[in-house]
Picture 1 (cartoon, helix red, strand yellow):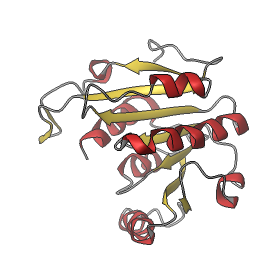
Picture 2 (cartoon, helix red, strand yellow):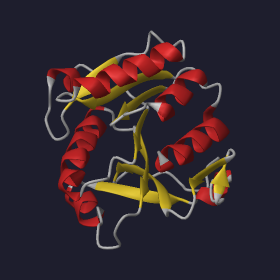
Picture 3 (tube, helix red, strand yellow):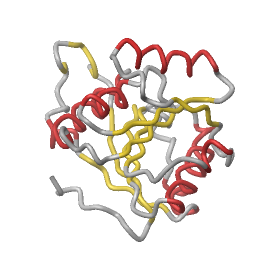
Length: 192
């Protein structure tokens, strides 16, 4: 949950009112970034593990609670090119809140992202993650999959505080936000 606040604050600060944007959230879990994107006017598709129907049901329930019954929820398995992945429409933004949780999943996540970027060359993958070990890195995998990232300082949207929105999150956790693209189309970190 720590990492969702960065996404939510950034999205709220930078995109409210962009109704033509299609966001696809991977590893949606509670779906907070996707729900905020939908409430800001974006078209949204949520996804979580195809092998975890309870997570998919959770996404649907959270959408229903937030009066977003028209938000599709699809099951995906990272690293596998499934019919649901192939049939996705053109995507503008991929959201991933704390999906880089287990190192064993890092490459499968990036395989999925690479596939989506091949299909949607201008798509941006906005992701936040909580630093759990200084030894964990996706740098070599980004290079392997012809991807590149830019770090987005949390202070650019006032998310670098000890307490956000009256909550103790993120507290003393180190949270990072980055935008990943194909190596040939990296955005500027200073764009507003």
